[in-house]
Image (cartoon, rainbow over all chains, first blue to last red; front, top):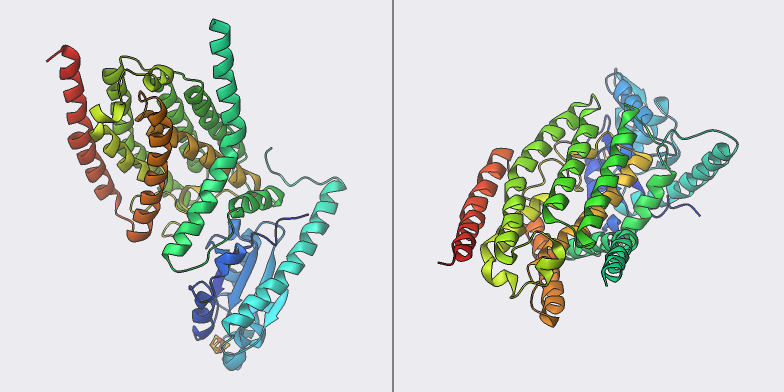
Length: 154
Length: 296
Ligand code: SF4
């Protein structure tokens, strides 16, 4: 049994967005939705995070930033793209500097559409991501059993 | 008789080793629930800290510097050791100095990485140590002046209730415990709350199992710091048990309350007010105890 689904810590990054989805993401932490009930913590530190929650699309300026955050996250991890902008570029798609949705920069596991995505659907997306996280954790454990180490003390 | 006493000490030490992480984890879970209720939220389950640590144990570790793991492991070791000394009825000075070694190891671990977040936090942690250490030493001196011994066992069996003669030291110690427990307004070096100015402070650069070890070390530390609160109620027979545990619960609750009411202060302010409290509450109390000891 893995504990990833019981204690998902996430990092939130805002790409090229209108900030509408960010406000909805933060709304999930308020007393009305209170995602801490599920052990979800907004860490702000990629090295502690299991879930990468991105809002907004990717443009030429934030491309290296998104990639760096993604690369700093230890395995296993999942990426959730929140909002139409993160899924496809949304209303900003035709802008001169836009590259498109987040999947142009990093592999995305769950897409949460909506403009803005409602807190309910964001939570739903995160729960879906937990299933994928569990699967990835299992695969990682199998790989480790085959002979890899995870480079930790203990 | 002597071997029986030694056996009891060993039993207490082993009990601490086994039970402290359980109690510490539950206290941390309770902390999160009470904090959530104070913010009109439901909050996580009481076992949440255990889930967090078990998850971190399975997660990949990223190390900027391979020495990190060693420092953190030694940090845990010294925290546990100081707790063992304490619960085995050892010398209070030894306990305090062992705990200081532990915190120095934690700071070294943070310094060993290049990340500016962790460097700045390490500096702040050193400042915090400067802020609380005088009070800790005064508490030890106060116990000696009050009970005539540094040994935890003797302090618990002192002739009269300790807190009556050391109210200033008690209040001063509770004040600096806000720093030790990493609570607002004094959580300048590390905090669990979201969106920190220094990300996660000292813990920024740790992940996976090293981070799990840090958590466990804090559980141990929390439990044995409450042991200090308990010591103030030594010397009162049955009342020691009841009064001591009640006082621990009250201090714990007040600390969460203050944590939720205050925002972080700058380190200058932290140093100023912790030294002021040490001087006014701690030092005067010790002077009073010294005069008493001379027979005035
Ligand atoms: S999906 Fe809509 S609300 Fe969300 S960031 Fe894009 S434009 Fe704003």
